[in-house]
Image (cartoon, rainbow, N blue to C red; front, side, top):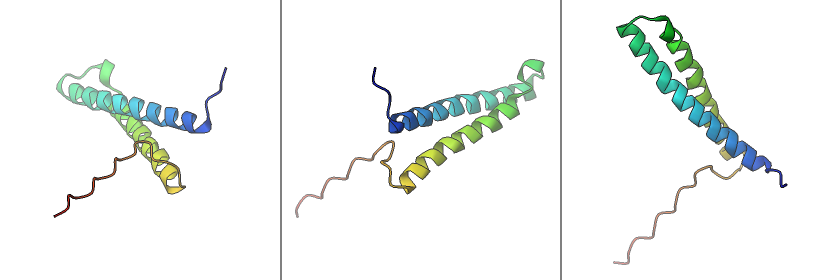
Length: 87
């Protein structure tokens, strides 16, 4: 069995943080909107979920930014633009 490299682990953590953060943020905002329309105990933690998930999204972006700042390869490299056609 081959163990994953540190780069693979970082990528998995980055992807996981982004997915969990986005889902939680969306749920938190929806629960908050629903709680304002129909107050219920089931959605009383909507704002807290949205805030914590926003922190996860920020942490995901911070991991990506720090990786790029310290010379790592970008998680999603951008394709180079083609050269303009000769005139």
